[in-house]
Image (cartoon, rainbow, N blue to C red; front, side):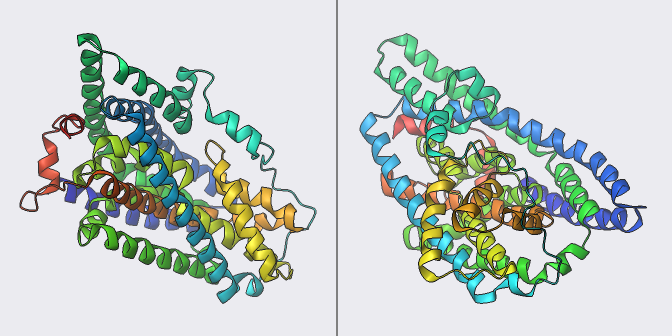
Length: 433
């Protein structure tokens, strides 16, 4: 009941934010004043996101290390291979859906707006989005630097080495250290519960700030574009849930019920980081072991961004249509393959999806200025793709857990929320498995 009340409060905060933002936008003297008002709302949002970010690094480290301390290198490699197989397949499907819906509805051709000059620039930093920089960036120069910057992939790499080293040591000392790390993971999950009590306020402020600046008029102007994009996301949701049903059976619907809170948080704040701690907690409630969650979920946040894939393919085709540039089928297939590779370097890049699109456009002689058409509504697009990323990663993690070791869901007679309230040692199940 307590958790259900939290979901209700989060949805209430979103609705109140929508109403408040509309009123502020409607009665603001000009765009500058609207932006100033939104800045005050953003203070609350920034504080909430900072509270979330302070949890992420220690949560990733403790859950992964403690899980690996009870695993062997063979099992980790096997899990990684299964996860990457899912990620690649899901990415290709997501990109294909983006191309399909952009061709089906052609939202760029009916956009009644003045096009930006083709020589205009977006000033997005695309230089760092290359294979060399991405590969070197994965490996941390300093563990503490990676922790301070919330570099999930870098933390993942260090945690793997740390976990393997810990599992190879014998004696009471390593066992004491593993126990301490397990208890730290439990503590971080308890902190997550405390921080999530501020979620309705953070959600309210995030939505109010976005609507205060943009107003609801922008939604009407870009109605076809936004509508066709969210239809594409809806199809992807259906496919993900259907595939999840093949592997998880009816349990997939319980999973959807459990992750509705992190999805709402991701949607309203347009931040994957904001939903990460809660997603871990809900997957634990679903019965996924910590060693799977601690490894697959951080990996998915870098390599399995299904909603972002749909967006990238959709955005490239939208810009081509807006400028009247025809793209042949072979060119579109090439776009799909290029995005498939280049998007894997998104981790750690600010405004990642926009940056990927900006980097890809020149390869096909498409004007970067076209992104200026999208930036006005990118907040709304980001909300949809971020929530989709949470859904995709949650299903992926659960299916990989089913493949690897089977899943032991909480008994149906006991509400998952109540069963988890006691916060039994999260990683004790790993030790006993």
